[in-house]
Length: 433
Image (cartoon, rainbow, N blue to C red; front, side, top):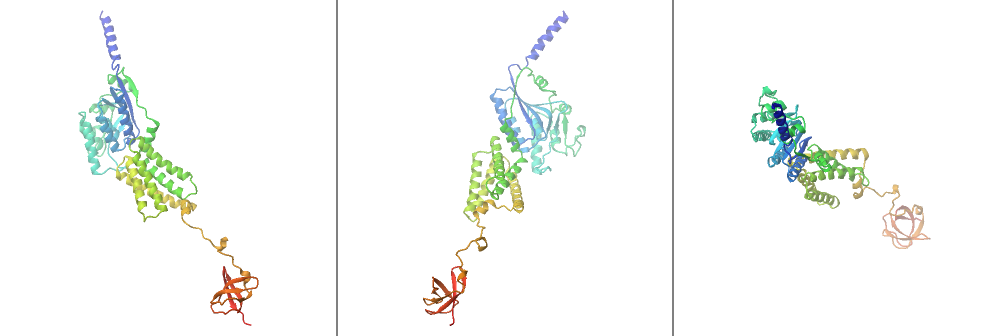
């Protein structure tokens, strides 16, 4: 009898467990590769899709080495503004900005062996950021930890090497990185899960319907293009390609490369939601003004306005700070100047400018003459038919010619001989008889 009751009990409670989350929807969103503005746009779109689909739970599958602080900060705001419960599932690593994103979720579950932490803020060169940026980041990490009643000292130890936690291999001078066991021990994770099946069981959603957010091809391009490292490279290729096209005959590879790089830059940022048509219009206006400066010199006014228009279009469309945009533009300008100089030195092309700047000369060596020099007339004798003062007309039998004396006056009927011919200028001298 007891055995029968045990079998019935196991069957009953097993059915309850199997029905956990039945009729509910879990939406999985990947958080992979570097954290940048493209990921921010993708997560915003994916969370909105999850809410529209009626998701009961959202899972962020995190595997990232970190990335841009401004993008992570914006992602944190998106997560906190979401009413649907969010779980951060760290499948491999959530370092730097990834740790901050995970801390903003309602709960954290880690795959065995996964890591979380090492969140010091660094600049574009890989060096420690300034005091102001560090202060902001430390406060942000502390606030994210306190959001779900986690001890903030561990979050600070992840971001500040001056916080000492030797028990967790983070003495002073080292950043804290927690594995799944340590994170659970200090209250930074709510458990471990080997895979999605265990994760859903941990969330009491074993029977829930699962949907995956899909990254479109356009969003993959946007994520690549919006990477802070890729932006100055695209700008450099774009500007160098277009400038070299001016020095090359026709429209060829440099022009296609330059135009393609700029189109890729603006297309990616439009997909990410940072660039609008106003950025494109500013870019086109800037290019037109620079062309006007080339053809109709305006003391540099059109050129300056054109350059400002192009920089403004990049600043509006990049989604980055003005300081970053200026550095990227200056880097692109330096590469363009250096590349153009080497190109001209090696190949000697002047292309477009050859069409608008006169460089050819008309000289007799190339067969260009303003008139025919009649050197066969030298030595021929004739008679002045008008006074030569010193110019006049002389008759040489078969023809009358306009002549000029060597400087003196000669009266009518003076016998003259031709001593020099230079184009249409025929010089004569009186003949002594």
